[in-house]
Image (cartoon, rainbow, N blue to C red; front, side, top):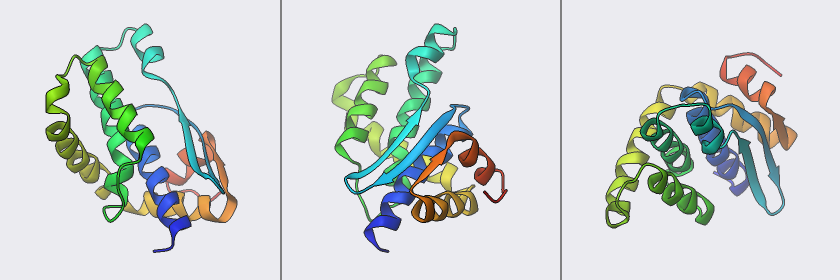
Length: 146
């Protein structure tokens, strides 16, 4: 798998898990320096009254999803920081970080496995176009062409 496709699949993995957990994706970008995904923040969901444990787990799964989508890759530094932050929000002990990380990657991989076609559509469109809006990501996950 070439690096651009691997990066696109990594970001698509984040989008698939975010969508599956009800977190709006605003956009995904693939650029020379790497890639970025923009989605709702945990604070917005907490401020809306959602359960802190659920929000923590949701954002931990989103962070783990990049590695789960490209198993031969690794979790990025930003993903590691996002995972640590999500676990902190939920009050999970730091000393269990690596145990949590492994379990979360496995659970994210299950979610992605249930949506493999969507992952391929999002990643393919991202490689082709370089940027996708949240609306386009949602449409691709739902099986539509963009």
